[in-house]
Structure formats: structure tokens, C-alpha cells
Amino acid sequence: KGSGKGLKGSGKGLGKGSGRVWRPATPGGVKGKGKGPLSSSGPRRSAGGGGGSGTPSSVPDGHTIVLVQYSDRNVSRTYSEHSGVMSAMDGLCQMYEQVIKMEMGSRAQAKYTVEDLWAFIDDISDLSCMVYSSQLCEYQPHNREWVKNQVLRHLKGQID
Image 1 (spheres, rainbow, N blue to C red):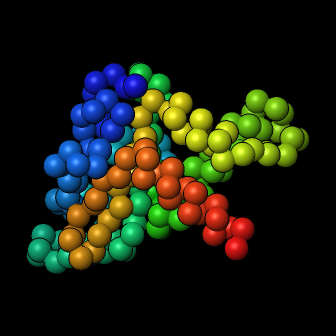
Image 2 (cartoon, rainbow, N blue to C red):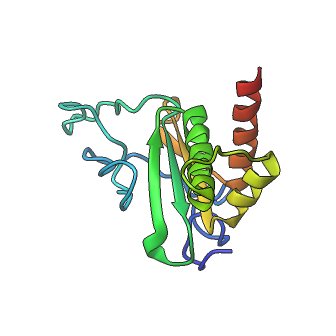
Image 3 (tube, one colour):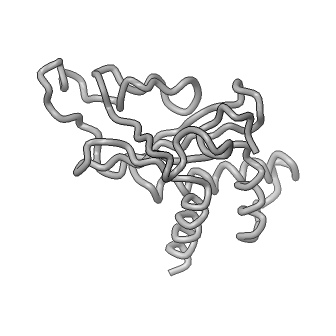
């Protein structure tokens, strides 16, 4: 899957084991929230923080960026930011629930199995997550299979 210019699904980019890690570089950070291009200049900083003094970023440990490309077209790329991994997995589940509601009508209650959710995740052209480690001061990349495992943990946590 993917166009060969992707994040994970193409065998190139930031998949786990690729040897490439996205590191915060300069103040300014991620532009916007939810849609639009992801700046590689680093994570969002608190107002007044960073100022070129070499101080650590104010990005909380576990801050998660979900990178999605819905089709082979580059314009289908988007991202979402979350305070942690479980929040990001909840966001993916909500994304799928919105798809179900659009297909069945907005009044329908979204009901699905884990297999349905897996099929949705597999149908996304490219999907990966970047999770910030304050210990390493960098974002660690994670691939589609990792995302599936985390979604399953999230869903099991809702049952308990």
C-alpha cells in the first residue's frame, strides 16, 4: 500500500525499525491542530518557552501525533495531536464511528466489531503514530501493527 512516498505503509519513511526518528529541533512547532501539513521543526512549545536558550521543550511525555494518509493522493494526508496514546486510540475509534454514521445516516448508532475496526485501519493508505519520550527528548515512530495493538488495549480498558 502507499505511493512509495509515505510514512509507514510504503516501506519507506518513519515506520518502526526504519532508523529514522523525528526530533524536536527549533521553537515554533506543529502548526495548527487536526488538519494540515505537519511541521518537522518540532513540537508545540509553551508561550515564552524555548526562546533559543536550549531549554527542554514543554511537550509532555506520551504526547502523540497520529499521521494518516487516507488515499494515495498526498492531499489526503492529515494529522491529529493527543495528550497520550490512549487518547489517540480513542480518536481513531471515534474516526471510524463517524465513518459508520456517515454511511448509515447520522441517526444510526455506531456498532462494530474489532475485525471491522481492523479492516478500517488496514484500508487507510498510510498510518503511523509518533509518541514523545521526555527521557529521550524525541518522538518515537510506531507502525500500523503497533496502532492495532494499542487500539485493542484501549478497547479492553473500556470493558474493565
